[in-house]
Image (cartoon, rainbow, N blue to C red):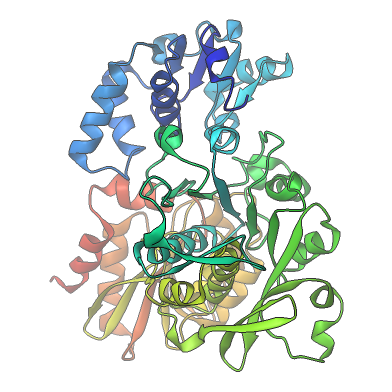
Length: 527
């Protein structure tokens, strides 16, 4: 497909699997908005349960907005097959749109796999963004850090566009012409569009028709969204890091790696691949990549004339640290962005995310003042090392966005004081040995929630080194904490880190409880 042949879909038999999800409903709205209505949607909820299912997958919307969105979807001129007729007639489809994890649901197998094997085209919402957006795309993927990096980039661009006196550096990175944003006509003034894999973020598929070539689309992109690639890559593709994850989805680390590499696979010489020099796997990608311009980022100090400038750093420009400052190296020139101490988001790992965001913004053409302002004013994402409360000099942090061992390790390494860790959930085929070593060394207490990942962690915990308690839910966890505080010597500024290191923690133990995380934490202070 291309932007010119949407009209060719009008007579096609189109099916959308998972139409009640955030991605599926956005696809339906987009197609109908382009006068395409030969659509059948499928959802394996019963009709009477569809409202609740829809609400759970549209958390980015307020309650009244969810109700409005649901009613609008149900009144579209399309057919929807619920559980009793799920996938009925799909074998006659000319084109199938699927969610990013369509292959994980047993209800879809083997029908959908057989259909795909027969040659029926399968597409995702990411394909639509890549194929139909008329503007340049900045897209971020990686095992950890992609959400923070995407939001950092958005913060920088919003500061840039929002300031009428900010220079607009056309051409990006190298040679540019400086003009003032307030001298761009209102019709041509760039707009920022931000969407992707973050479930707290609203999809902007319905905005594609209003985008111009001057606008900017920022996408967070997961490995499963990159599986069904269109042979198209973004203008700026960022890979934050790659460690074993989602192996239950991909079957092997090699397959997972190839999915991630799809982000930059189809770039050309006018594009940029922003790659993490400090990550062994991503550095290997940088060594092999020859489709576009490689731009490195690293937390390491890069000194002029040092051995660090040999090898990759002698071949490519990049962003790095020197003398506690963030430096851009481009065309043999070095530019200072800001001091590390100016960054507000906690955690050493977040420095990598800042470097990646700075790199993307600079390469696009954002002025240095706007980059600094966007980075230093950013305070973090929901559910990622967010301080919830300080109760009796014990600090409680929401890190439920950390669904991999590496993300939880990064959370632990963000603190120098005693740590009480609440973790657990479902396994995604990951190795927990490094996390267990970190817990055994640095945690005072581990409170472990149920799940297949928890079973792995439990086997690796050394109870001679730390206190360890298993719980079934948050109600029990809160009681455990209360009892523990009475018996143990708790130091001032102890951090209670709620960092799962596994999948489905938030949906099972927070959303499924009927209370939000803050309510549970507040209950620690009650008698």
